[in-house]
Length: 361
Ligand code: XIL
Image 1: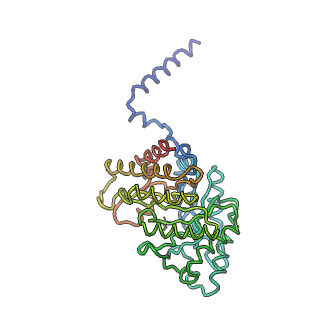
Image 2 (image 1 turned 120 degrees about the horizontal axis):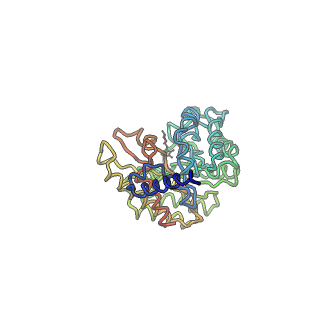
Image 3 (image 1 turned 90 degrees about the vertical axis):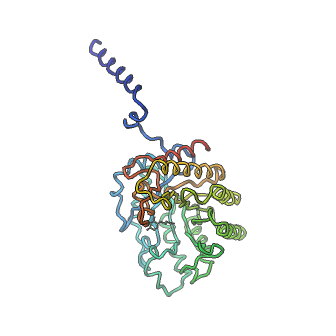
């Protein structure tokens, strides 16, 4: 008994000292971050750039704890694109993607598939660029082999990505697929995917639909046509690669509402917020960080206000740490588009998302 008394005293003293610390110094004690996934009733996801030549799961070891703590959904940033899964006409390579799927499952996270059909030159298998055979049969086989392989393991797919032109947003994008099959390749892909995995939720995914009224309308016309003809399209993914001030929040809300009004699922599928195109600042200063926080918060709120709970397919952020962002790779000036800094510390942007999720759920 006598021995215990000094310990109790020490504990009380420590508690007193802790309570006198300022919040800043308390923050240095490892207080766990609240988890985004616990603040939402829909999937909150992150894109991970692993798979095949991109590197393997060992590369994300350092960030693993943060990923598991914050997210309950994963998307392969590149590893499930056409050229990785289907590298030669008769060859499918699922090994790296399978590893990612079991990693997700092992940590209680779901996976969304991205993407069965995408025109982008860097992601098209080389053999496909010169393919001379029956294009309709070949694409059908591509979609079905992949969907069958992952059936029951992936909850949803981006079936077709970015099929609407962005410069001439009232027409389909001129792609190899459009050239070979006309716009019918889009519905054919949805039909093939649905046959191969009838339980997967099938999305059309694109960017700029919240920024350009003609592009939004063109997509909605496609949706209306598909719904009339019972093409199995279940949802729309808004990539949401946006900047600090554009597009404005009213445009974003009305785009989300227009899709929700059609009874479809709605995802924010690749969110990031660029903030340095105009300022070209050398470092992320507090004023910019606060603007980014407000922007994340207003978009998350807009999603919750515009999309009824049963239609929320979730929100996915396009990378974990700022240094991982595709925007940082591709721009000549620095940027900090994501929720966590290069050391894995939560930025104001993180708190903006959390506030958006908490205040409007
Ligand atoms: C990007 C990846 O983030 C980059 O690493 C890659 O070099 C190119 O593709 N729209 C999409 C995503 O649908 O697949 C793109 O991902 C970003 C834009």
